[in-house]
Length: 140
Picture 1 (cartoon, rainbow, N blue to C red):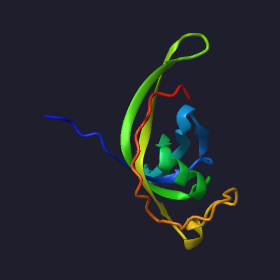
Picture 2 (picture 1 turned 135 degrees about the vertical axis):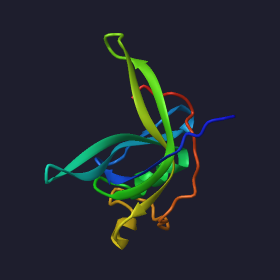
Picture 3 (picture 1 turned 180 degrees about the vertical axis):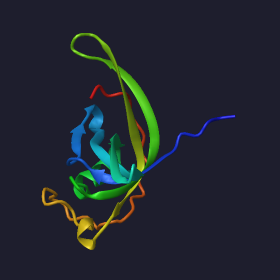
């Protein structure tokens, strides 16, 4: 029996996607995503925010670079991935990320317009139909 690795998040981008172009023309984009939940404790309303590292590959990264920016609300589907790397002091570090398989922009109609930095005029989509996977591990 095989396992299931599925993550669904709805949250706000903590910053604009960081886009990199790797050898072979592979594009990767990453950004932090904030999700919040509210609960009551001792009669006080408390909000707890979690930060998630989101990684998008190839065509999905290209779409994200055009339409996503800090503050936008998005629905993301993907899978958890934990990888390790050595820092400058050669200490092994671990990072857990969500590798996005698709996303949907949520919010006002203006949220579906390309970001001002975009030079191409693509037809906005509320949901992408790109499915990508990692080409390998990246030490970022």
